[in-house]
Length: 204
Image (tube, rainbow, N blue to C red; front, side, top):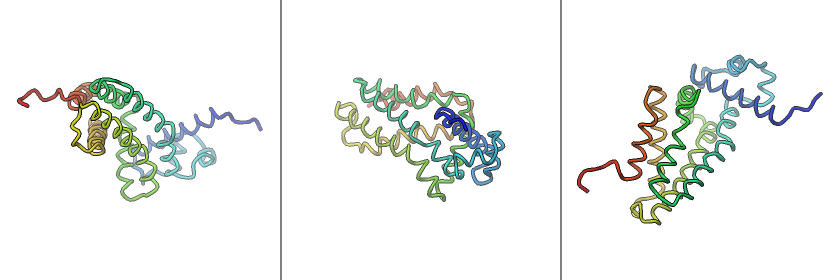
């Protein structure tokens, strides 16, 4: 039997993950069966179960090392930016840019299903919350650096500031899931203005 390349294995796993998210967005997490995912991926059950034991394993893959490494890279680039406003503006552009990618609408709607599932499913909660926790830690470092420069009030808790930034992101995901026509670029400009301190023009 010919040896299957690592690239082929990765492509097959990605095919299954994408099929699962399409099913989650269409039917919800619980009503989706592994057979639904097999049908959507146009693969036999044997082919799918070769890579994943169940839906929770698919979620773990979707929230895996590749995505974490990408986010870590974005945060590392931000910390290298010497100007705080440019740092926040760059972060906003980088993190929100994928909302206009092909398939973003499906991912947003599927993510809402998974957020709800986290409340009752420990395995999904463990997998799906791993990246937000890592991002919060990275943003905490970004805020601390801005405080060190004197650009952010040192009396504000960095972790709370990071949580507020994540809320801006996840709140937009919720809105895009309900209305995909919301303009991402306009939203990013507002986020950059809020984080950069230029949104308010009244008396200080």
